[in-house]
Length: 232
Length: 284
Image 1 (tube, one colour):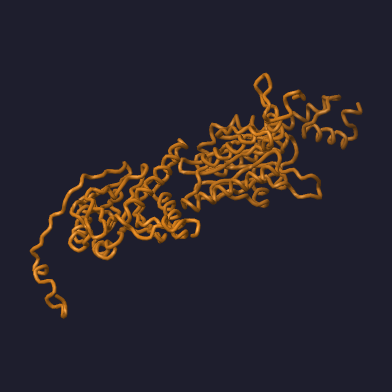
Image 2 (cartoon, rainbow over the protein chains, first blue to last red; image 1 turned 90 degrees about the vertical axis):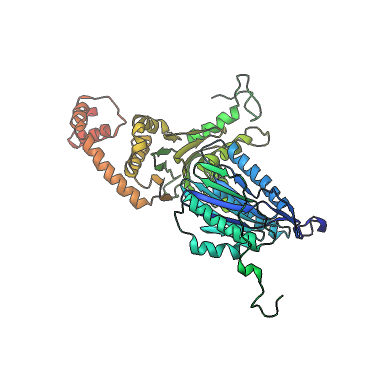
């Protein structure tokens, strides 16, 4: 701890991305995030790509400090490069990348100099689908559907009810859009520019950004505090 | 190989472009007792001829488990072999810790080869005096590699190293086309027969021969002595049945021959048989 000067330890994040939501579906993985980079409460950057393909088999999605995510992308570039340079029939799959990242995140946490991110790692290799997450304190786990940040509270309950094995691509996208719409309504750091990515055995596809249709005429929105005693 | 003025340092080239120290290291491998490896599509079998210094001592350990999916058989300086096995185990376990995935054999073998190469290019080091047969499984199937002291490595369908390995290699060369489709049992049988070939007439027993197997769904492990002896007994019976028609001919030859000192089992038996009858061929 003392070998790193105080001014060089990460103390708080500056430019942050909000939630990432990802699910397994019939052919692989679907991952969605918005394209916002907030500077505190200002929605400053509106075209930040927070989902990226890694190697041939994986997708990474990040929330939290954007500069730390860029640093992680550099680590992963080097990892994949070395993997390719072996030039043998082997390649790192999503499970291996996830575990590598877990080691990196946990070791940084132990040095009190964390990478201030929550990462989602998903992919397909040899027909096996993989989806996991790791965050800035090194907590990592796998599941059929993953979310970061507020997504854990807003999106995962929806996924727990409505996710099932063998979702088709259309069903998966609809489900993700439903989650992203709730996040757009309720998360103040969400922006209405969504990026969805798909990973299958064939490879990664990044879909062009789009915006969600929203409806603000719900009666519940008109008088949100009616019935909440003491609220205004 | 003769002493010459270019063989003192590993870092001295000869005018013919040879590094004699490296070649001498490969000689050390040839002096060690035999190690044999063969692979099918799904399994790899390693067999070793174990020689004890004397009847009082235990046998040299020549097969090492490196990880659940990789094992190695060595020939040459066993001490060097042990050190390299420890390196391999360390690499496997570190990779597994970081990636939660088994280290692909092909990559371990390259790392090992690069380590050996370093010793051929430093004046304060010497090459490792051990040849390694690395058997392992990874995503792309079953693999058998041979790592030289020179830093070269090759992939093989079947191979043998160490003393009297040529006999085993000859046998393997005859049979290797069938290995890819072999069953696990047939592969072990071929390994035992190859081991017997390199024993050149000595009796094949489980105290002289060690077998190890790795395969799909089967972690690397060394077969225990009892199992090996059972396998040998099964195969020996088959072999005796095969050679039975040849014996009457051999016996006839023995009676006719007088001065030929034969090193083969049957020749020895023939002589003793003659002595029992009251006059060996030599007496005539």
